[in-house]
Image (cartoon, rainbow, N blue to C red; front, side, top):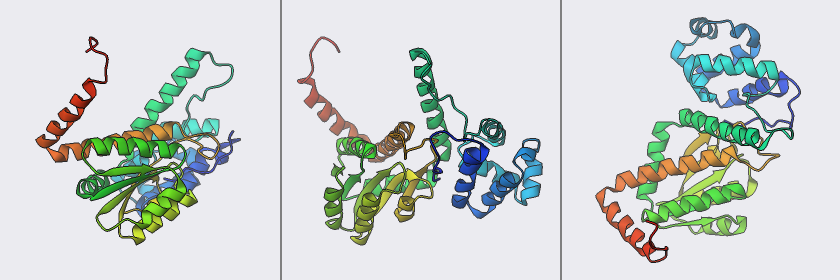
Length: 296
């Protein structure tokens, strides 16, 4: 889901949690959007409502309410109400302890690790298993895989290529806009592009993806849900991460992207069966001579 464009320091509920929800609703399915509309109309009343009451007022089923909560990065209805209460009280989207100048190093480190852990758990609940299956199938059948990204997403693209080539997939990573723009024009049907963008709004990357699709290649995107990039992909693996990527270099977003790459790599490896183990063992053997002995 597209993260809302926020100022560095939200000044109230409308600039924080409610603004997030207002932007997020556009990417929700129709039934889940009715739940979001109810929350936006009666946020404080909803805190006192039961699951059944919310479903009745929104004219949807109880499972739909729960799916809406999960689409917004929560584990369920109770978690959604808790985070909403925190957000309304503080004016932030999902309350987390941001590091402050007065924090000790230990406090700062705990906050960074805590936010990273929460982000990974939220993303785990957001991923669509059917889309993961389709993305893995595309990668397994790919004639060639090209990984595109810019900035910090370019680093994730390089990590993806490193994992894929070790699995025997012909792959390359480009983090220069001119280079992946030219490379995209040379693709053919049967090729796959993995496109990475925290915002999903980077013009140069969108242009390269358009060229790849015109050439007949499929595109697997790891990006913000509902973003322009997600709309262009054959398969979009969409992430909702509470991070202002317009101001700060993506941190937890990058961790979420890397985790999704790991999921895809493991999925591809499992599809390849026992013969992969033989290739991996040969690769590992080639590294033994490059390491200091006696520390095995």
